[in-house]
Length: 305
Image 1 (cartoon, rainbow, N blue to C red):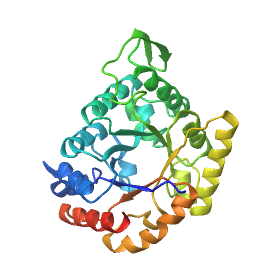
Image 2: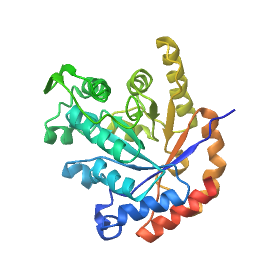
Image 3: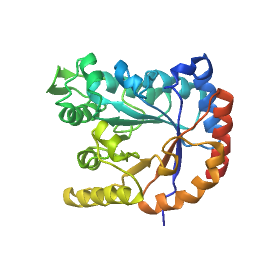
């Protein structure tokens, strides 16, 4: 029997050019409530703390701080999970990430899902004092440090830019072991990271030209997705992993965003994703106003549940 596909929706916290609609006081809370009422299982936010101007000029975007934005969403909702899609781990000290994540998880009643990735934007790494060349090693190290900190016991660990000598972090997250960690990226290294260190995988549509820019593998259709999932299963068998792996995918049919009128087409597509092994579908809604965004959430939620 296929596992049911759950639905996540990205809150438009990157729409700073329409701040009066999407970033005004109460806006994030209103949209999060609308998503929950519409039947979505998670709300998600992205992460760009200090992007370079060239990236923005070429179509890149800003974003609210993910933990602050999700805290507003958490306070306005009761059920939906709170997903970072994705937090760039090498930008930050891992123990500060562990504290922010544990705080949000405790205050939300254990609803955080920490989606993370190694990142790709070299100019942002430079501005934040992070080592672009070591981003993969630093990501692996950070994931291990997060899990160690969340145990609430003395940590003895040294890494790039930090040294913990019997330091302790409390409170522990609401869930034993901490929030689920989902790994973003299409490359085989990202897939191995998800299998070895994660609880889920966050692939995304990427044409070959875009994949080169974001320094990941192309993913242009279900065949590519199935190949990635086959590799994940093979690697899991090699290392002896038996735990299931959540897979959260932005559907190819809505790679540029979803509108209310796309509901029927997306509903027809979902069984193929479930058959491939996808457990979560993530949607970005196309809307010019907050009212239109909430209307689209209601329409898509009703059609896809």
